Length: 221
Image 1 (cartoon, rainbow, N blue to C red):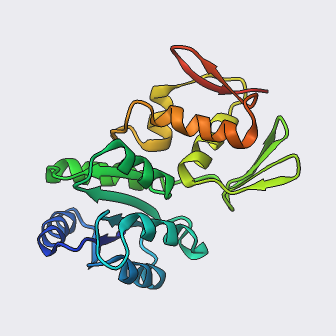
Image 2: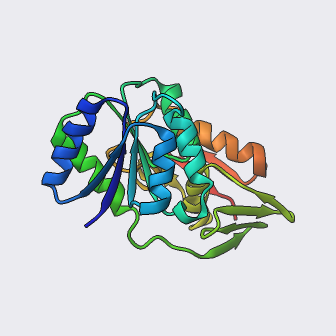
């Protein structure tokens, strides 16, 4: 039974979502703010944390950042469930280390489907090192090394790089990238992938990732 920590300052949302998740067999823990969420997460080690963005004391973005810095919780999945649907809010969530971002309102069946899709990503995650073109990635520690310099990337940037480096020279289409990094059902802005590619190039160099116009991207061998 997967354990889910649900964090929202609206009790109606907590009750509604908890009810639907309990019906699906999930174990649900709830709280009303980010600070309490961090304490509970460290104690319970949930499989998934669902965060609201706008909360008192500590907002969801800051909470996500804090959780991603806790070694014990490095494999915990994080999803935002928020009334804020702007592209910049979604990008802030992904940059903080979120695995998915869902806008309210959402129908219960679709929410459960998205949650199950995210949880499937936890199964069989590789924890190995890989080296290509002078770039080494450590999937277990979420670290990247190039020219003896160590880089620590936000979760989505790391996962995008890990995907591309897994098959050097092979072109990954936008659809494949979205499915593997953001999940097949997640809805993100059209330029989300481009923004993350640009950030990778800024840190590792323009020559590392090549754009195949109208198709996608590949990691240069």
